[in-house]
Length: 123
Image (tube, rainbow, N blue to C red):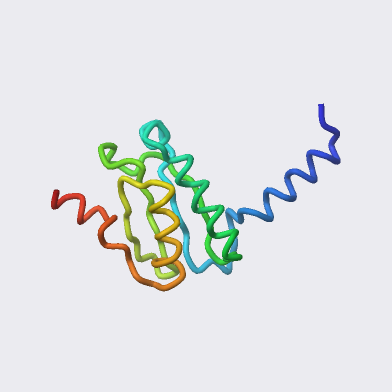
């Protein structure tokens, strides 16, 4: 078993990697992590967002989990919410799509329309 000091160090490192609550957040990435999302692959998608944000040293974007977003057939689903509350919903997510969303949407402000729920409804 780990000592209290070791556990506290692990906790400290984890909090440095992912800030779940912060007042200076520009955006939030909300990953649907209900049973349907997890079964469809939401965990690797969430990990991809965290890793890519870390690689780019972006600390003004938080990655959080939520329950079912509501359209299980399109899982894994992710919502990007900006400071003003505007939301873009991405569907059928993969870790590769997450990397592209960080590069295009989070860094450059261009929505990846081909991954959005609106595009999925056209198919």
